[in-house]
Amino acid sequence: MADQADIAADLAEAAREAAIERHAERLRPPVRVWCVDCGEPIDMARRQALGDAGVIRCIDCQRIAERRW
Ligand SMILES: [Zn+2]
Image (cartoon, rainbow, N blue to C red; front, side):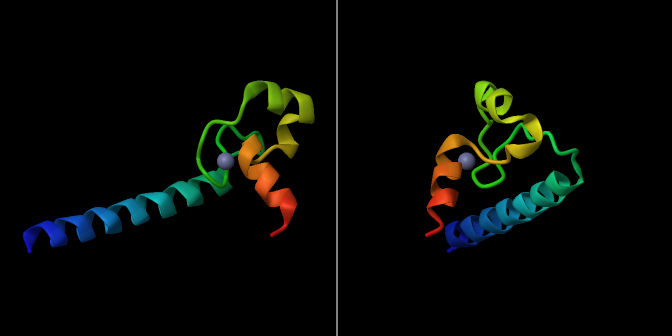
């Protein structure tokens, strides 16, 4: 069962890194390079079109967010 333990350790590690990443994200200035939801780079043209400070998500995540579930 070493494999399952390894997978669990990897998941824990990934979760910890994601938490650190989110924390670091809050400390950054308002200009976003990465989508806050998926972590993908935000399209440069989109940032310029909407103004850097107002863009926190990539276009896909923004579309989902605006749908408001
Ligand atoms: Zn995204």
